[in-house]
Image (cartoon, rainbow, N blue to C red; front, side, top):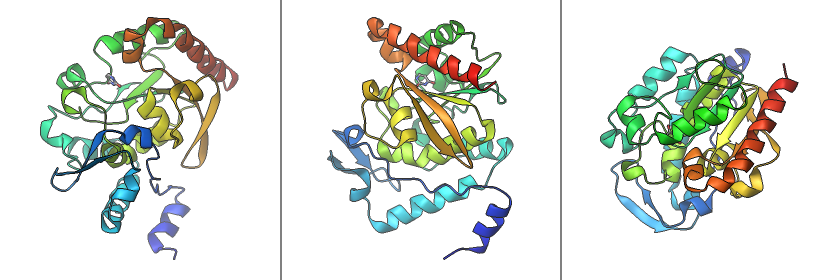
Length: 259
Ligand code: URA
Protein backbone atom coordinates (compact mmCIF):
# COMPACT_ATOMS: atom_id res chain seq x y z
CA UNK A 1 0.00 0.00 0.00
CA UNK A 2 1.28 3.50 -0.82
CA UNK A 3 0.94 5.95 2.08
CA UNK A 4 0.17 9.66 1.70
CA UNK A 5 3.48 10.47 3.39
CA UNK A 6 5.29 8.45 0.70
CA UNK A 7 3.56 10.39 -2.05
CA UNK A 8 4.53 13.74 -0.50
CA UNK A 9 8.13 12.68 0.07
CA UNK A 10 8.27 11.33 -3.46
CA UNK A 11 7.01 14.62 -4.84
CA UNK A 12 9.69 16.42 -2.86
CA UNK A 13 12.31 14.05 -4.23
CA UNK A 14 13.07 12.72 -0.74
CA UNK A 15 13.89 9.04 -0.53
CA UNK A 16 12.60 6.89 2.32
CA UNK A 17 15.33 4.56 3.37
CA UNK A 18 14.42 1.06 4.21
CA UNK A 19 17.45 -0.39 5.78
CA UNK A 20 18.38 -3.72 4.31
CA UNK A 21 19.41 -6.55 6.57
CA UNK A 22 22.97 -6.16 7.70
CA UNK A 23 24.31 -9.04 5.73
CA UNK A 24 27.57 -9.83 7.40
CA UNK A 25 27.40 -13.10 9.18
CA UNK A 26 31.12 -12.89 9.55
CA UNK A 27 30.68 -9.63 11.39
CA UNK A 28 28.27 -11.23 13.82
CA UNK A 29 30.59 -14.08 14.52
CA UNK A 30 31.36 -14.39 18.22
CA UNK A 31 29.74 -11.08 18.98
CA UNK A 32 26.96 -10.66 21.49
CA UNK A 33 23.58 -9.63 20.14
CA UNK A 34 22.30 -6.84 22.36
CA UNK A 35 18.61 -6.16 22.90
CA UNK A 36 18.20 -2.45 22.00
CA UNK A 37 15.49 -1.97 24.61
CA UNK A 38 17.42 -2.90 27.72
CA UNK A 39 20.90 -3.93 26.73
CA UNK A 40 20.31 -7.56 27.63
CA UNK A 41 22.59 -9.90 25.74
CA UNK A 42 20.22 -12.02 23.67
CA UNK A 43 22.67 -14.56 22.34
CA UNK A 44 26.08 -14.97 20.88
CA UNK A 45 25.89 -16.48 17.47
CA UNK A 46 27.23 -16.59 13.97
CA UNK A 47 23.71 -16.65 12.49
CA UNK A 48 22.52 -13.61 10.59
CA UNK A 49 21.12 -10.80 12.72
CA UNK A 50 17.71 -10.64 11.16
CA UNK A 51 16.94 -14.27 11.67
CA UNK A 52 17.38 -13.66 15.40
CA UNK A 53 15.16 -10.61 15.80
CA UNK A 54 11.44 -11.00 16.39
CA UNK A 55 9.10 -9.39 13.79
CA UNK A 56 8.07 -6.71 16.26
CA UNK A 57 11.71 -5.66 16.79
CA UNK A 58 12.26 -5.48 13.05
CA UNK A 59 9.20 -3.31 12.69
CA UNK A 60 10.47 -0.86 15.32
CA UNK A 61 13.88 -0.66 13.68
CA UNK A 62 12.37 0.05 10.29
CA UNK A 63 10.02 2.73 11.61
CA UNK A 64 12.81 4.50 13.50
CA UNK A 65 15.07 4.49 10.47
CA UNK A 66 12.34 5.93 8.29
CA UNK A 67 11.70 8.73 10.78
CA UNK A 68 15.26 9.89 10.56
CA UNK A 69 15.27 9.86 6.77
CA UNK A 70 12.63 12.55 6.76
CA UNK A 71 14.93 15.02 8.50
CA UNK A 72 16.95 16.04 5.54
CA UNK A 73 18.78 19.13 6.67
CA UNK A 74 22.07 19.42 8.52
CA UNK A 75 20.75 21.09 11.67
CA UNK A 76 18.02 18.55 12.17
CA UNK A 77 20.21 15.57 11.39
CA UNK A 78 22.99 16.72 13.70
CA UNK A 79 20.52 17.46 16.51
CA UNK A 80 19.04 13.98 16.17
CA UNK A 81 22.47 12.42 16.41
CA UNK A 82 23.41 14.52 19.45
CA UNK A 83 20.23 13.46 21.25
CA UNK A 84 20.27 9.85 20.02
CA UNK A 85 19.42 7.08 22.50
CA UNK A 86 18.67 4.32 19.97
CA UNK A 87 21.27 1.94 21.32
CA UNK A 88 23.18 1.44 24.53
CA UNK A 89 26.27 3.29 23.32
CA UNK A 90 24.50 6.47 24.42
CA UNK A 91 25.11 5.39 28.04
CA UNK A 92 28.87 5.10 27.74
CA UNK A 93 29.71 7.88 25.28
CA UNK A 94 31.21 11.20 26.35
CA UNK A 95 29.59 12.78 23.32
CA UNK A 96 28.45 11.86 19.83
CA UNK A 97 30.99 12.23 17.02
CA UNK A 98 29.28 13.57 13.93
CA UNK A 99 31.70 14.81 11.30
CA UNK A 100 34.91 16.49 10.23
CA UNK A 101 35.78 18.32 7.06
CA UNK A 102 33.86 20.06 4.34
CA UNK A 103 30.15 19.52 3.79
CA UNK A 104 30.43 20.45 0.11
CA UNK A 105 33.29 17.99 -0.51
CA UNK A 106 33.30 15.72 -3.55
CA UNK A 107 35.03 12.97 -1.57
CA UNK A 108 33.42 11.45 1.52
CA UNK A 109 35.42 9.14 3.79
CA UNK A 110 33.54 6.64 5.96
CA UNK A 111 35.38 5.10 8.92
CA UNK A 112 34.18 2.67 11.57
CA UNK A 113 33.47 4.28 14.94
CA UNK A 114 34.98 6.84 17.31
CA UNK A 115 37.82 5.70 19.55
CA UNK A 116 38.79 7.15 22.93
CA UNK A 117 40.31 10.32 21.49
CA UNK A 118 37.43 10.97 19.14
CA UNK A 119 34.96 10.40 21.99
CA UNK A 120 36.82 12.97 24.08
CA UNK A 121 37.31 15.49 21.28
CA UNK A 122 34.02 15.09 19.43
CA UNK A 123 35.57 14.77 15.97
CA UNK A 124 36.30 11.71 13.80
CA UNK A 125 39.85 10.51 13.22
CA UNK A 126 41.83 12.72 15.58
CA UNK A 127 44.03 9.95 17.03
CA UNK A 128 46.94 8.01 15.52
CA UNK A 129 44.76 6.45 12.80
CA UNK A 130 43.52 9.94 11.96
CA UNK A 131 47.07 11.23 11.49
CA UNK A 132 47.79 8.38 9.11
CA UNK A 133 44.51 9.04 7.29
CA UNK A 134 45.42 12.73 6.90
CA UNK A 135 48.86 11.83 5.52
CA UNK A 136 47.37 9.32 3.09
CA UNK A 137 44.79 11.83 1.88
CA UNK A 138 47.46 14.54 1.55
CA UNK A 139 49.51 12.26 -0.70
CA UNK A 140 46.75 12.52 -3.33
CA UNK A 141 45.94 16.18 -2.76
CA UNK A 142 43.00 15.66 -0.40
CA UNK A 143 42.46 17.07 3.08
CA UNK A 144 39.72 17.56 5.63
CA UNK A 145 40.51 21.28 5.67
CA UNK A 146 39.91 21.69 1.94
CA UNK A 147 38.06 19.01 0.05
CA UNK A 148 37.08 15.93 2.09
CA UNK A 149 34.17 15.14 4.41
CA UNK A 150 34.78 12.51 7.10
CA UNK A 151 32.32 10.53 9.20
CA UNK A 152 31.90 7.09 10.74
CA UNK A 153 29.44 4.23 10.53
CA UNK A 154 28.79 4.67 14.27
CA UNK A 155 28.47 8.07 15.90
CA UNK A 156 29.28 6.80 19.41
CA UNK A 157 32.31 4.99 20.77
CA UNK A 158 31.93 1.27 21.44
CA UNK A 159 33.39 0.70 24.92
CA UNK A 160 36.94 -0.62 24.90
CA UNK A 161 37.06 -0.05 21.14
CA UNK A 162 35.27 -3.34 20.53
CA UNK A 163 33.77 -3.96 17.09
CA UNK A 164 30.36 -2.43 16.36
CA UNK A 165 27.53 -4.95 16.72
CA UNK A 166 25.19 -5.48 13.75
CA UNK A 167 22.33 -3.85 15.60
CA UNK A 168 24.43 -0.75 16.40
CA UNK A 169 25.34 -0.47 12.73
CA UNK A 170 21.72 -0.80 11.75
CA UNK A 171 20.46 1.68 14.34
CA UNK A 172 23.00 4.26 13.19
CA UNK A 173 22.71 3.67 9.45
CA UNK A 174 20.00 6.23 8.76
CA UNK A 175 22.31 8.95 10.14
CA UNK A 176 25.10 7.87 7.82
CA UNK A 177 22.68 7.79 4.86
CA UNK A 178 21.56 11.29 5.79
CA UNK A 179 25.13 12.56 5.83
CA UNK A 180 25.91 10.98 2.46
CA UNK A 181 22.74 12.32 0.90
CA UNK A 182 23.36 15.83 2.20
CA UNK A 183 27.01 15.94 1.11
CA UNK A 184 26.14 14.19 -2.19
CA UNK A 185 29.79 13.40 -2.98
CA UNK A 186 31.13 12.05 -6.26
CA UNK A 187 33.27 9.42 -4.53
CA UNK A 188 32.86 7.46 -1.30
CA UNK A 189 36.00 6.10 0.31
CA UNK A 190 34.94 3.20 2.53
CA UNK A 191 37.67 2.46 5.04
CA UNK A 192 37.54 -0.89 6.75
CA UNK A 193 35.20 -3.84 6.93
CA UNK A 194 32.27 -2.16 8.68
CA UNK A 195 32.02 0.79 6.29
CA UNK A 196 32.44 -1.40 3.22
CA UNK A 197 30.18 -4.29 4.19
CA UNK A 198 27.36 -2.17 5.55
CA UNK A 199 27.21 0.30 2.64
CA UNK A 200 27.71 -2.32 -0.05
CA UNK A 201 25.41 -4.75 1.75
CA UNK A 202 27.77 -7.65 1.35
CA UNK A 203 29.68 -10.17 3.40
CA UNK A 204 32.68 -10.18 1.08
CA UNK A 205 36.12 -9.62 2.53
CA UNK A 206 38.01 -6.33 2.17
CA UNK A 207 40.65 -7.93 0.01
CA UNK A 208 37.90 -9.05 -2.35
CA UNK A 209 36.17 -5.65 -2.38
CA UNK A 210 39.14 -3.32 -2.78
CA UNK A 211 40.80 -2.50 -6.08
CA UNK A 212 37.63 -1.83 -8.08
CA UNK A 213 34.82 0.70 -8.36
CA UNK A 214 31.48 -0.04 -6.68
CA UNK A 215 28.30 2.01 -6.76
CA UNK A 216 26.05 2.80 -3.83
CA UNK A 217 22.52 4.05 -4.43
CA UNK A 218 21.80 6.95 -2.10
CA UNK A 219 18.52 8.73 -2.74
CA UNK A 220 18.32 9.17 -6.47
CA UNK A 221 22.06 8.98 -7.10
CA UNK A 222 24.44 6.14 -7.80
CA UNK A 223 27.65 7.15 -6.08
CA UNK A 224 31.01 5.59 -6.92
CA UNK A 225 32.64 3.89 -3.96
CA UNK A 226 36.19 2.69 -3.37
CA UNK A 227 37.01 0.26 -0.58
CA UNK A 228 40.27 0.37 1.29
CA UNK A 229 41.89 -0.81 4.50
CA UNK A 230 41.13 1.04 7.71
CA UNK A 231 44.02 3.29 8.82
CA UNK A 232 44.10 1.58 12.24
CA UNK A 233 44.68 -1.74 10.45
CA UNK A 234 47.45 -0.15 8.38
CA UNK A 235 49.18 1.02 11.56
CA UNK A 236 49.54 -2.67 12.45
CA UNK A 237 50.16 -3.95 8.90
CA UNK A 238 52.54 -1.57 7.21
CA UNK A 239 53.06 -3.64 4.02
CA UNK A 240 49.37 -3.15 3.15
CA UNK A 241 49.98 0.61 2.85
CA UNK A 242 50.99 0.15 -0.75
CA UNK A 243 47.59 -1.33 -1.58
CA UNK A 244 45.86 1.52 0.21
CA UNK A 245 47.88 3.99 -1.79
CA UNK A 246 46.63 2.28 -4.97
CA UNK A 247 43.04 2.58 -3.66
CA UNK A 248 43.50 6.29 -3.03
CA UNK A 249 44.89 6.78 -6.52
CA UNK A 250 41.82 5.06 -7.91
CA UNK A 251 39.59 7.38 -5.87
CA UNK A 252 41.57 10.37 -7.11
CA UNK A 253 41.27 9.16 -10.68
CA UNK A 254 37.49 8.97 -10.29
CA UNK A 255 37.40 12.46 -8.81
CA UNK A 256 39.48 13.82 -11.69
CA UNK A 257 37.28 12.01 -14.20
CA UNK A 258 34.05 13.45 -12.80
CA UNK A 259 35.20 17.09 -12.62
N1 URA B 1 38.65 4.94 13.70
C1 URA B 1 37.53 5.21 13.02
O1 URA B 1 37.03 4.40 12.26
N2 URA B 1 36.98 6.38 13.17
C2 URA B 1 37.48 7.33 13.95
O2 URA B 1 36.89 8.40 14.02
C3 URA B 1 38.66 7.02 14.65
C4 URA B 1 39.23 5.82 14.52
